[in-house]
Amino acid sequence: MINIIKSQREFFNKNITKDIGFRIAQLKKLKKVILQNEENILNSLKKDLNKSPFESYTTEIGFVINEINYMIKNIKKFSKTKKVKTPIIYFGASSYIVSEPVGIALIIGPWNYPFQLNIAPLVGSIAAGNCSTIKPSEYSPNVSNVIEKIIKENFNENYITVIQGDSKISKELLCQKFDYIFFTGSTSIGKLVMEAASKNLTPVTLELGGKSPCIVDKEVALNLAAKRIAWGKFLNAGQTCVAPDYVLINKSVKEEFIINVKKQIKDFYGDNPLLSKDYVKIINKNHFNRLLNLLNQGNIVVGGNIDKKNLFISPTIIDNVSSDSTLMNEEIFGPILPIIEYENLDDTIKFINTKPKPLALYIFSSNNKNINKIINSTSSGGITINDTLIHMTTNYLPFGGVGESGMGSYHGKASFDTFSHKKSILKNQTKFDLKLKYPPYNTPLKFIKKILNLL
Image (cartoon, rainbow, N blue to C red; front, side, top):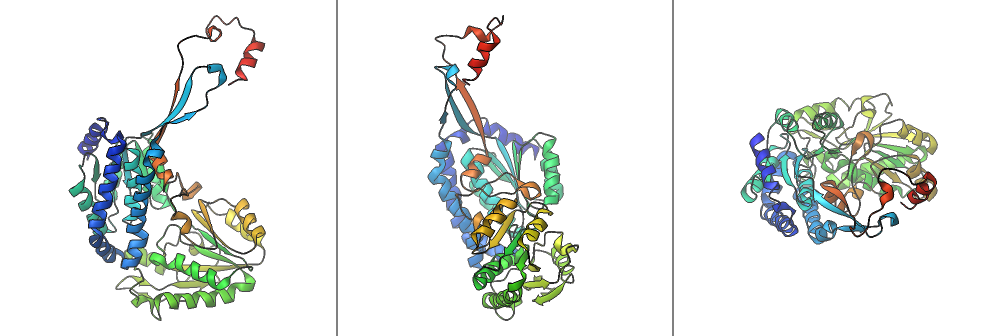
């Protein structure tokens, strides 16, 4: 492990990765080998999570391909030296900002979107000119094996490498000196990553999670809201960091909303979602058992069926949930949707603000006054209005958390910036020199104050 990191640093110091042409070529190669291995990736996602080809392509492969295409198209613009203004007191000087690679990046990926959430950060690292080490999750072994195969067969390990293993391997990696660490996972593990990074003063991006609330106003297209919330919640069986964690709904539309969601679940997955080819399983027994313990913390009004042998839990809605329950105080990360009614929007906002800042917040309303009130009175990583999840799918919006839901962002230009250091450069002229800045300081202070106002 140490030898690989040492070799990557030696390779990076040759400045090969700093060449824009090299970066573009590597991105094109990555795209090519992903498409060549598309069937293998789809099969591995089926084995690990029972993902359908459609869901696997749209949320994993297609997402990455789109990110690569965007980066190839824009990398020259992103890399261009940016000239900025220089204070008039430095007349004749010039100032500019150069984006340089941070160096050796460690990418630690999760199991829930095991291809996308390992490779999308890699795209940003490549585009910015870094060497990269990827540590995929041991909970999705089939996808991790495919990633390792793709990288090993097509890229020099001194440039990009994959290191597999359990949490022990992750700890060993975190003890090494990297120039940047990009972690996607739970808040609890994110704290350990940040603690380990601090020992080497290594900067980090933490893409975490938390309980993302979904507010449903009484002024709303209720059927469409139910459809979009059901889609966002039960995609990947709720194992999505930005899935709606719970619904806060106006009391006057709650019962109709539940009826609509129940209908949408049937439309999506049939009479028995556990048999649907489009429904994803829970990743392993530990997570399955954790979710089982949450099913008895309220009244199940929809779903609640399980297949213990194959690790399926049907899309479930739970009513009459206590705010003190585990269900309302831990990220669910599964296909269980608590419903909490409200009468006053101000009380709902206060409730959200008593919780850690979420990664996402969803608002369903046709009342712009209420929408703006929620936006201005809450803090979250991002917001989608009248839909779910889609704010994280665009290259034009940075995606990331705030507070306990994470720090830093990526996607599109934000990915390039995350894996880059913005180096400030000021080039002064040599034709004349201001003597007043040197000792002995005989210039009146009154005059100096006027000069400093020119900065």
